[in-house]
Image (cartoon, rainbow, N blue to C red; front, side, top):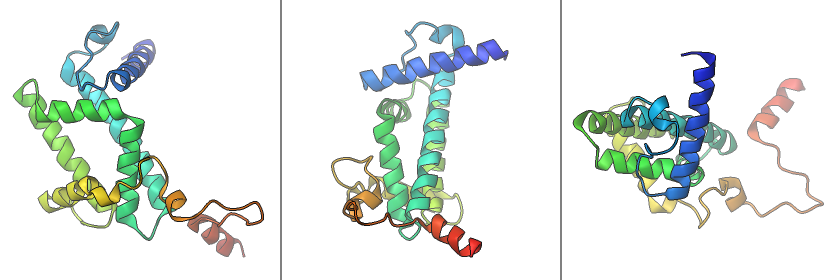
Amino acid sequence: MTWTSFHRRGEVLRTVVDEVDARRDGMVPMDLPGVAETFRDELDLIAALSLRWHARLSGNVERALMGEPLDLGSAVALAWHQTCAELPGIRLLLDRCTDHPADAAMGAALAHAREKEWAGLAIAAGLASDGGAAAAAAGRRLVEDPARRGPDTPSQSQAARREPAATVDEPPTPSLVDRIRAVLAA
């Protein structure tokens, strides 16, 4: 892949993400300009969208775990729901294509990716130590538990839900990382 084709692929992928977020119908937008020339087939495009989803999810999980190191399960679940709010079209498309794949290869690949995602979430939440079937089941329960979804705004951080907003007179509470840095610096 040349540098130009790499950038072109990124531009087309951004257009696809914007379109699936706008449509929110779970359909693969192969009809968009540049998609057929950039991606081999639906599975290639879905793989790129899945990679975008997992990259965002990983970042959100890392940030959530840094902000809430004591309640890992809630932090991971909140990060998953936040990612759903940030990329709703991709999540709908992945779910639809997993539940109703165009062919057996797509169904197998997406089902495997979903199981791995759930297992990874369970491991991050401290509910499992390996990526087996039990971990996948724990991860699925974690993201499907309505009690872990939080208030009406899933993108709202857990810290903001738990603590009232600081007044002007109160200094902000330092994060765990800031406290560790202060101890090391002393």
